[in-house]
Image 1 (cartoon, one colour):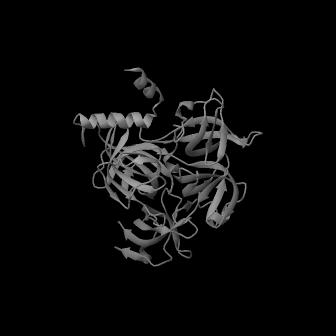
Image 2 (cartoon, helix red, strand yellow):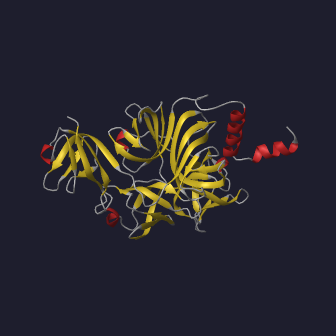
Image 3 (tube, one colour):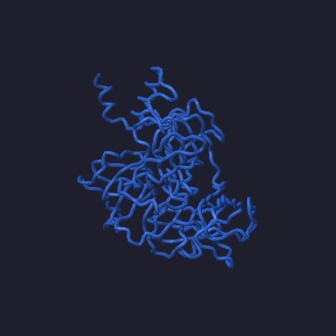
Length: 387
């Protein structure tokens, strides 16, 4: 290796190395179905019965559930609107068996201000829309979020301003540290400082994960709950998430384009995508657009077969399956066994294999619909009886 190439190799970001390896493999005859099995998916949870992510039903009953620090979590902690990364076996007929489910939040911190459609948390704007699930412990949805309350926010990170398009908001009163997930700017290895969305950070030489820092990288940063005398967040740890370096025959990812050079070289939610041979719907592609990408993973790069640009005004249909556990026929609300989410049947509902009179504890149902206006429950539009 000559001196210039060696210098580049030492400084090149990991995603660029991965892309180079993927392109080399393709040139050597690699293709769909070579070198990898199973599937990877990233996006918000839009249903239960098994968890639904990007339209795929993943049976998570035997999966390891963890947070993005790698700490084990309970299946019972999975909720509608949570962003997750799923490793699974092959997807067949819209279903697969998950081996790992990683919970990936975007922000943990104190609410500093709020408006009708947004919060400011840790100095960053959290955008709230009709697709934002609000934990039902926050009575009235956003109205139940008090200034100073510590919350955990799940959602799509916007690369430049550092804001988050929230898919879920829930309280986190016992948080031992605050958290940011965003794109690094103004990185100085000499001063040991960097920015995310206009917020300033400082770290010591003993902090883990410093090697992830570079301008343009999407990172996860844990910080102390108070800024220092200079208004900087004091970093406790640095990390990242994503599909890793393996191969997978199937991959489905939803996120925001965090950097863009060309259709052959961009990142979604921090990991590399090559869409040079993909069918693109709603393009042209550019940084900041929210997309759904489908393809395969090769050497950690998502080789896309299709990319669809998503409209911020379009929101996911939600689905809950299971046995009715509790039912309030006055409020016209019921819950599913093992789930806390409430399902309202007070509106216009199409029933299949039964009627409203058949809604009784013990009946197995599949309810689909949209979020209520306050984001705290599913307003059913279709209910099917399965027994």
